[in-house]
Image 1 (cartoon, rainbow, N blue to C red):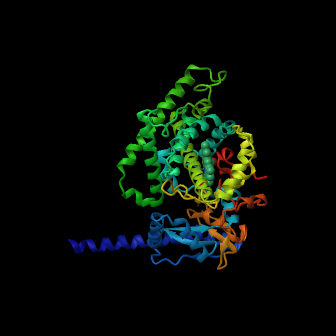
Image 2: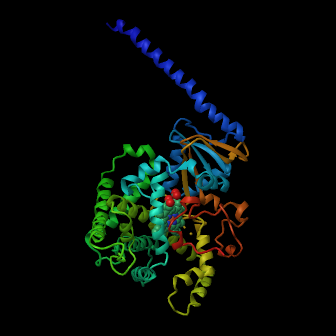
Image 3: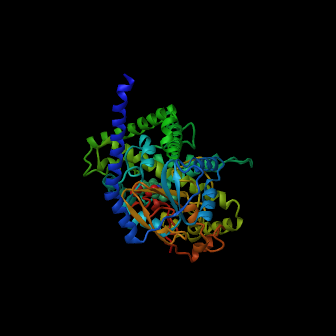
Length: 484
Ligand code: HEM
């Protein structure tokens, strides 16, 4: 019986091999030919490659990255890698090809000139959608464009900046600081501050984490559930497909709580929409500007509103808290910078500044810009709180994935000066932490925290704390102070 079956197995094997061969020939004649054409026509050359011990899955590099993340040395580790392999090099990211670059021209090409050739990549979407749903931060193409068009006008209007609300939350933060000289982790307070102010701005009701006792039990639970879920999606992003084999029941429970909590506000806003003439009435929860009510004027799709709110909460909350943490971490060690900031604040004569006056404070602007150079790895969220935007960019690393065969202007050849072919599905990561410290752009003192450099500095794509191109940060107006 078994012997009778042998010929049919060998026929199946032969047929399988023939099919593979035919597919290979077909692929070479179509995709392969078109790729070789791109390489030939644009003078693309192969990149420098990371010398993997495991060239199949790149587990060696994965292990180094995990270790560096655990010891909070990831950014420095990545910087050292660029110093060794050049401004653009190739590595293996758990079985798929990845390019890493710190060339502004390459980043400009991905984010702007060839915007349509690059997307966010499946890794980010797979990790983020279970918590955030489909919104501005998790979609590409038409869906992203729709989100961006819907959200953008609300950002322009809200840029008037509700300083009074923010002032109230900041006062609470100041009250929380012990007066007996004991040590306090300001960073922890900044994360509570930005959750409190963001939830008030987005939902119309604050989580009030800085004023325990004034908040409801469900708001307190929301704060915990959101913190955990956000941390979890950061891990899912880092682990990629491996996260599917690590069960996380707490994430499922917390994400559900987050959804239900936001849905209760969305329901109220949609009810308001149904019972008021939204064309005539200035639809607000009360006299304040509430993002949710503005969104509910534009759509009555509850899922879409919930997703956009969560996308914005994620985009705006940690970034702002990280910037504040960086700022205070740095300024606390620099009495000279502190004295100059104080002198500028004293010019206000004890009056609260308006939004316009805040934007006019030059030294504050220089200090924030300098801060913008370096901290947390987007979206490798909260645990990594380090330091301010040039030296410590709040979003110190980011990536895109090619959605079509394409090429970048730099990174090919041993010197990295030739164009580099990028096949479809390749991930291209860029380290802002490293780029913002390039001595050829910022001088020999690039590593120094020096707000004064901004008196003359007018960088282009080599300074990118808010990203660039069509997907530039929508919230930057709330932070960015003009450079001139
Ligand atoms: C220091 C503060 C901030 C920094 C450094 C920052 C940085 C960034 C960066 C680098 C991106 C691009 C992400 C990517 O495409 O992969 C981004 C996108 C975005 N940011 Fe910010 N952000 C900050 C604050 C805010 C705030 C306060 C809000 C909202 C209240 C906000 C809303 C957004 C949104 C909606 C996007 C997505 C834009 C799109 O994909 O079209 N950001 N931000």
